[in-house]
Image 1: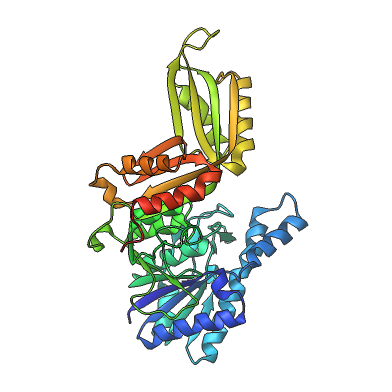
Image 2: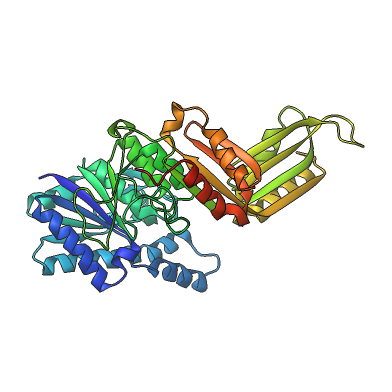
Length: 417
């Protein structure tokens, strides 16, 4: 039988009525002739509740017990989904991570896949099971302990199963009906994309688009798993949603496919850093050790600062806003220990990142000029610029973020198919 993987997120299984709705979609695929592996998340809000219980019980909790508690949300959903399917006459069985088994590393709370043996599930399919309902977000460590994969881990579970079982496709059911050119809440002109390349989706996911989890897209790209993003709350067919696929599967690529944004950014600048070989390593080494995720980096090359002997430079970088205190502490400790010297650390926590993404940039010139002209026309000042082969990102004042997204969406005519 051809195999399909279907993943349902928390909002899609938020209560018994929605579980029944999801089960009907699974039943429809079984009736089309598929064996189905269903990956489920915990009911909406349940994981946060479980995390809260752990934190109330133990401030310095044992990560192994944290995983044991938090993974239970998906177990409940898997059992309920299997029961619902059985009531509908579909031969289904629920599977927890250890029963498959989903073998992972021992990094509790952020485990990685090691292997997903097929034998147990394949044997049950051969015996007449039509649907395996697998609890997402979890696995088992070499020590035999339950592990979890981190937030968004059910998306990654779904892609991993699609790769391991050679699935025809992996359908991700969520509360939106596909991937859009930008957030429809910001501009009504946002258009659903029929197809998007893995690389574009990876950039959009890492830049703030929350439709798919970044690790799941990385895995899909590595193993060439076709992903389809669909709405749980609408009738769907073969043409519904957005297909995330190889660049070769897209007939003609637009120069820019989408505009992404991230509100929760901060800009930090070290003023008058001694300009010498190894200074970048001296700055970003301590930041990495402190677990700070640095994104955009700009260095203003040497200036002779008044009252200072020798060349100095200013180093600007962006970090998530919730990591500012950690970054500040790392820089202050590095200066106190003599690793670096600087006059001042300036923080700007009122910035946002806006990016345009498109594989068409590889073969087209003038994208940056067009982007900067659109922002200039709206009097939006650019603080930092970063580029890659298929992406241009800028850091701007947060108050202009929505205006910038709208202006760029119009400038690249993304509303046109």
